[in-house]
Image (cartoon, rainbow, N blue to C red; front, side, top):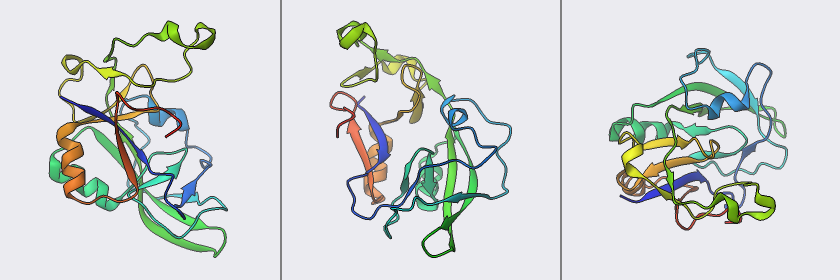
Length: 185
């Protein structure tokens, strides 16, 4: 099975972004792969970055995993069960208007499943991030979406979920094969 890195397509002109977390939200907690006890149905307020444009993709760019209603609906329709979310309201500092429809999303499942990656080939013998890697499918517990223990900021999806998201015409997201992925994309 093929696997893909899922992320916001920051090449889209005018894509909105959020570059700060409100008090009480720990960015690192969204990358542990563990269920978070503090997620609730109560909305949290976030602020769009000053340079945000008017375009709203299915994943909002920035430092937090913010997924649009339509993407979460697609997850549900596909049968994804290993995520939790908290609704947000977004303050646009340029207009002082509040927007809805995005959720802080926690992908549950941190998997140590990278195979054949040569960490020592990186400069200074210290890895900075994964690029062009393969997934050992036997170590994914057949999850369609998960985070990598080796690089927890990456969200990985399998081929079936990727094909389903393409069919659903999700916008402003990228799904790059793990074997082709690099941070300069």
